[in-house]
Amino acid sequence: MPANQQEEFEATKKHGQAEAEEQIRLHSRVVDYAIREYPIEVLVEKYTTGIVDDTNDIFVPDYQRDFVWNPKQRSRFIESVLIGLPIPYLFVADVSSEDEEKDGRLEIVDGTQRIRTLAEFLQNELVLSELDKLALLNGMRFSDLLPSRQRRFKRSTIRLIELTEHADEETRRDMFDRINSGGERLNPMETRRGVRSGKFIEFIEAMAANPKFRTLAPLSPASIKRRDYDELAVRFFAYADRYEKFDRRVIDFVNDYIDGQPVNFDPTTDGQPLKEKWETMLAFVETSFEHGFKKGPNNKKTPRVRFEAIAVGTALALQVKPGLKSNKAKTTAWAYGADFNNLVASDGANSKPRVKARIEFVRDKLLAQ
Image (tube, rainbow, N blue to C red):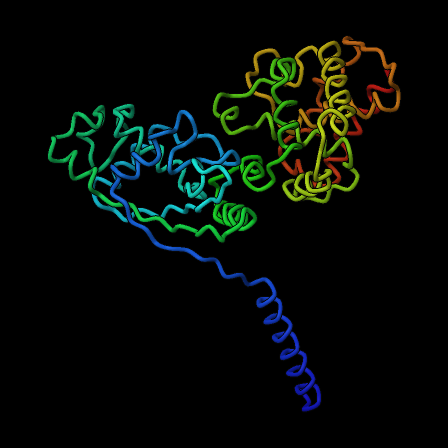
């Protein structure tokens, strides 16, 4: 490389480094925290005492997800404690409140499943199962252990990183988002409930609870627990509003749609037209599609891409022709045929052309009836 080009390259590199350093400084924040260590017995007591009236010292915030660990996961966590394996830190935050009874409580930022599992075990509600190293404990509860082992378990300590009262809600939610975005621990809707809680998310949950929707789109118990009904509902509204703008990554597309909702979203005003669109679409699907959103009469689960195509395509058709009449015989002729099934196959399902093609296929078929 000629000397003048080398000098230009070095100058550009230094300029880029300086800009990067400035960006780091701009977004750096000082997060005050302290490291605590509690015996399991004390930690569980702080969580369970006052839980009924929401005055417990350590609490699960509204934006946290439901308890989703299965028995094997819970049992393996207890096994890890029993054999002395290192346990990840729990993250909690000191929350300020004008209510004296709630001021100074600790909000769980990360560790809900661990502390609930410990409480369940000490309260004799968890039966250990599918253990490998401690296979002889399978089928046992806490009370089945020797008294000496019970005492040692309760004395075992768990470390916490406690954010001080100076850590605001934005910091806590940002931490929750980052902690839970590095693996497969949370699905998109669960993470959204943690980071984007508010009236619009509550509205989506209300729409997802519609009994007709759940009848037309059956899901497995595990999917229901993972809030897949919420995910289907929010995808419907996002695609129905702007499917032409979709570009490959569904999670970013849906998040952008949610972030575009009014900060003070009002279900009775902002939500009313959305609710009407949702309920009108469901009513039409009920009378037009023999098996609802399912592939056939014997299917017990609803494929996500099939739901999106039928739901959004139907909504778009009704938008063009509000008085569209249902014709189950004609709909059945194409809704369960090879052409449509190929469009909603999982392979390449979220490429931009396929998203557009499957939605418009349903729209155009309905308008042509």
